[in-house]
Amino acid sequence: MRRAVAAGAVALALVAGTAACAPEPPAATALSLSGDIHTHDPALVVGDEGEPWYVFSTGDVRTGLGSPQIRRSTDDGLTWELVGTVWDAGTRPEWAYEAVPGVSNFWAPEVVEHDGTFYLYYSASTFGSNRSAIGLTTNTTLDPDDPNYAWVDQGEVLRSEPGETDYNAIDPGVITDADGTPWMAFGSFWGGIQLVELSWPSGKPVEGASPVTIASRTSPPNAIEAPYLVLHDDWYYLFVSRDACCKGSDSTYNIAVGRSRDVTGPYVDRSGKDMTLDGGEQLLTTTGDMVGPGGQSFSHGYLAFHYYDAAAGGDFRLELRELAWDDEGWPVATTAAEQEG
Image (tube, rainbow, N blue to C red):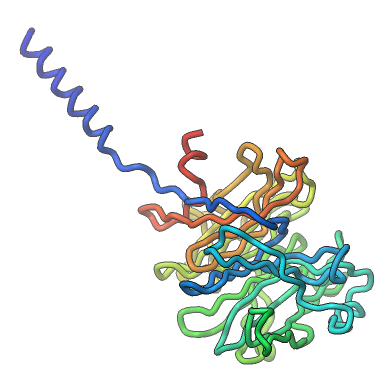
């Protein structure tokens, strides 16, 4: 009997030792942000070592004619300052105001660089309508203090019209695939998330290209938007925001992700469910005072998104997190504290 008890004790000790040595699950690292982080739909551009970081975001109708806002950090994304807007009264894209009557501010910009040129895509729309357009402006530098700094309007990229198109031309997210071909994911509600091939150096759809659906919900109102594509370890990852944004502390926004070996899909979640059939791996959702995270972008390992701060009456805030990746190759956006909670 004593031998059996001793053996059992040894076994328990081994189990306890194994548990004690078990590796911690992967967790994201949240940056501690300060300064002006009043940011919605952030497009993050992480600078090279020693260079500034930038965040472009949805415009504010109270300043800059609703032009996309620009913020800069000179300490690797920790402290942020507002450094201006993309256009002013003298340089605004008049065609966009004509294409979308009633547009007052411009949403969800995207910024990518190709061959020394920065391409800034933006959304022109009004709430509840798919009379929308994606526009493009370019610059040779992001530094507003550079004497060569000037945004040059390149006009319309894509448009949607009520009764003519079943998608909504907003929320652009651009990726260059492993073969060097650029693609733009876009879409909000209506027909879901679309993908269209682009061409350099124009940054616009190739002639004759038609958008194809790569993600959708299976029931009205098809609450999916803000696509962003990321290439990581030979997988293409499609990040999307789902459910309701823009309702302060009542927002139900959340971020989901799927992946594919091919940029054109199909994108599936961990269980293999296709994202065109309401698939999607839950990445981030409301936790504590962080309500309705979404409107995401990605740059050099960092996920940027906005959330509504319940402790500040539902006002929106910028959040930056360095993603972790699990053993199966899926991104992890929750922090260790959130996982423990």
